[in-house]
Image 1: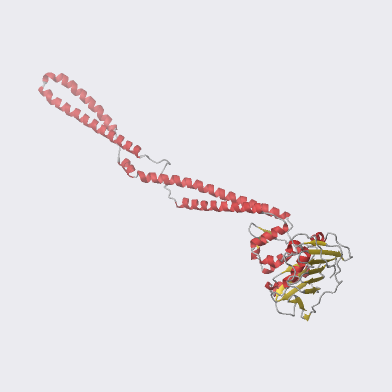
Image 2: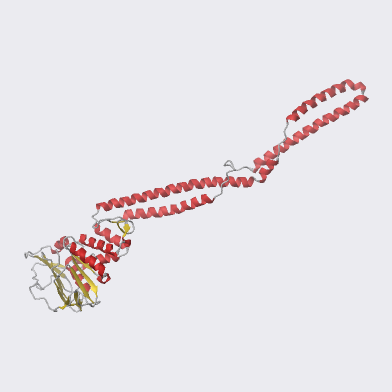
Length: 451
């Protein structure tokens, strides 16, 4: 179903227009402010009504306005007054439609979708529009992935810092043990060693004293013959004791205090190395935990992305290869922004076509942004798919398209057009009317019953 004829009177900047398309691509051209956008708005307002209609649809200075749209199977007439709008529809057999807007809602898709506007939006807006169109809500999954990514970013920074810190920290492989050595313990060892050595020295000295005493006794023996027996016994005893002590002395080894004294001198350095080793081991455990946490968050992100893909698989995707992530649309897993202009245009048109399967009518505003190559792409795709495209373009070349000037059609493909009022009866209006306000339904019908 396509538009066979469009007529409008006193709508926005239009005075009176009558367009019967001769091709599937209808170019509306003219200077800025001529009324080109008004033609495209007439199509949307006639079909969608309600909130699509601006607050003041009637041309400034006029009291009434009308739009008539012939779709072949149906003729649609939407009339406007200062306070209300009425909608009237009859089938090609002449049957009156009791619920005209419900009928339009059934056959009309998303005529407001502009593929060029969609293509030129930023990536986040494209994603938002696309998800709304296919009826998929990923708000919860998007927030979950965003939170996970932010958490992983923080963990990742901590992980990198810990790994770098662990790598730069010193490690003293020659230092054994994990407990620091106490200065009191070393001091006690030194005191014990000094005491032991002192005891040995005293013992040696005492033993030498025994010898000296014995020698004195020998001299005294000469003088004291009468005490000889006692002295001999004493001497013999002294000899025995001396010899016994000699044997003990031969087995005694003095403790070298040099290592202990050196150990005390390097004690703080050793303890520092022990602390370094312990801290390095602790940081290693912490960095390993950060790596595990980071990898866990990465896995959860992958799971979230998988959930989104499964959700997308259930949605009616209008273009093969079209998907999305948390921030933008993707085409064959590549950001849509990196696709060529031709691919973007093809995708946008395909979406628009999918949204309008019954009434095969598309609209593009700001068609001046399209170069010759893209216009060719559009024309081919529209014709191949059996659609009808209405688009506007700013220009003064009156040889191409339908030229609008001051709200009237002045030429069609270079041929002058007559400015005329529509003859009464060309679009006969049935008596049964449904009245609606641009925002809400009105109880007042348009008193004019014919065009």
